[in-house]
Length: 266
Ligand code: KIV
Ligand code: NA
Image 1 (cartoon, rainbow, N blue to C red):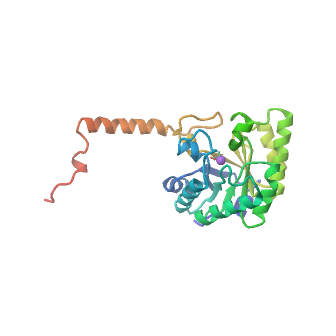
Image 2: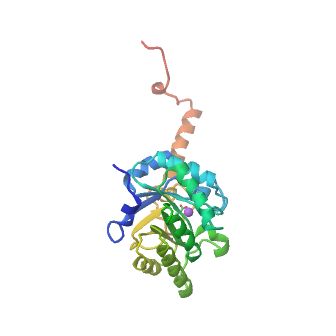
Image 3: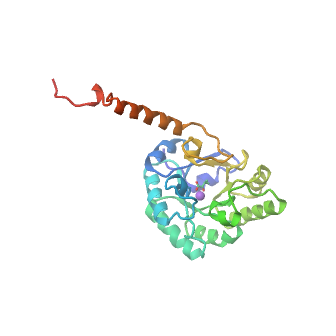
């Protein structure tokens, strides 16, 4: 299987839904890759991998290290890497330097950054210089302090209108796709109809051009999941059960058993 490309993803608008999940490690990437069109190395790794309270303390070093691991573990999906808080907002030039480092150190095909109209010049600057940009509007977790929490966005008409114009602004600036997170379903549908690029929903609408979830959330591995997550498994429960069985056997000296020990060959 040849690796999908950014133009191939763009061409999915209005046709086949795009399947996207997060990955932070090579092994998880290997497992997800055959069934995904895009893998996102999300800055959600701050909470999921590093136990941080938000994504704000995630660094370029972290994104580059995990991004490279995910590219090494995949051969089919388009890998998109989140630009961490503080690495791109100051200017298009700052964003280009950070994005170029991410692309060079990881081998990923694209970056993702949060923000609307204010980030449109940056989206244009990168897109016109060979760096495909995925946008991210609606609930933008790097802005948690400004937003006052992780609640759904676009409940008021004014806020919905602002998010719609943000989505249009980054699409016009050349975003090849965008994530729309945590918005009213009706607003998500409006955005899908209003922009020419694929809209990847998370807590948005089944009418989006694709869907993304945090893999640990959908597997039931992370502690706390928002309303928009559907848990397809209970991996946390299965890990607890497996570790419990191991602990019992170690304490009973029944592990290792005959099959796991070395003895002289007969
Ligand atoms: O960091 C992340 O995992 C994300 C997705 C939730 C879209 O940005
Ligand atoms: Na993110």
